[in-house]
Amino acid sequence: MAERRFLFLMGSARPGGNTEALARTAAEHLPEGAEQRWLHLDDLPLPPFRDVRHVDDGVYRAPVGNERVLLEATLDATDLVIASPLYWYSVSASTKLYLDYWSAWMRVPGVDFRRRMAGKTTWAISAVSDDDMAVAEPLVGTLRLCAQYFGGRWGGALLGFANRPGDMATDHDALTRAKTFFTARATG
Image (cartoon, rainbow, N blue to C red):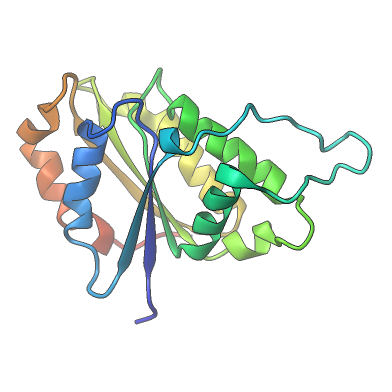
């Protein structure tokens, strides 16, 4: 089996929250030999995204600072785990901003972002504060379609119920599913 490198991108506004607890439970059961790296998007703030595709030559500058850290970590990973609580039926603001930067990275000379994203597997992990997990469909759809856009694989979504801090510890079904989450077969 080829070496797998999992990048866990934590998109919660609360460090150590329910989404992270679910992600850490799942990470305890990664395939043997898999590497893992954890980045909290709030620890690597990005400026507001500016769309310059239709300005002058539409080329973006080479990333620096936090943007460069996120770009390099993204490209180095074989598996992207987007761990974002469900905020207003979608990903968190920091997660959405990170995804917006993918538009820029496709247009940075020499990065070859689109080609290098092909073949990666994207996974979603989220805490949902509604009994009906179907309310997370916009979040799941966003991440699934992003993976497919680049010719990647969709690993799936691990959703758990949590409203208040620490609630994830009581969602035994989600914690059980977390143990086999990363052994599921990804789809193209």
